[in-house]
Amino acid sequence: MSNQPAPPAVETPERLAFYDRISRKHLTPLWVSLANLVTPEPVSACQPAAWSFAEIRAAMMEAGELITAKEAQRRFVLEGSGAHTAVNGERTPMHYGDSEQTCYLSTCDASKQ
Image 1 (cartoon, rainbow, N blue to C red):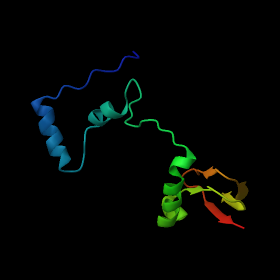
Image 2: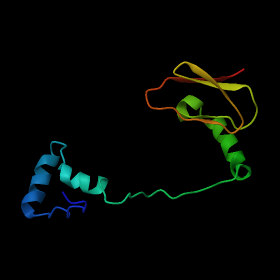
Image 3: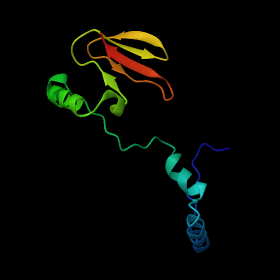
């Protein structure tokens, strides 16, 4: 088996007609989807970025007033002390600058003493 990617499937009139027929049943051919998902090199529209806390502090504080931690599905300790997080029942102190990222299906809770 070669490590070289397979050439893209040729779109014939018969195949296009088939795609049209199956799309009415909310189906799509896997070989078309995989061509965009499984690529020889990673493909991402993401661009790296870096901010200093001083540059974004005001926006972070405003965000904290606009949305709850539960809605955001994330918790951050920007300033202060006395916060903790509990992931799957294990309590861990949080300190300035900490971010809690939990695995999907993990139970988590956070509070401030």
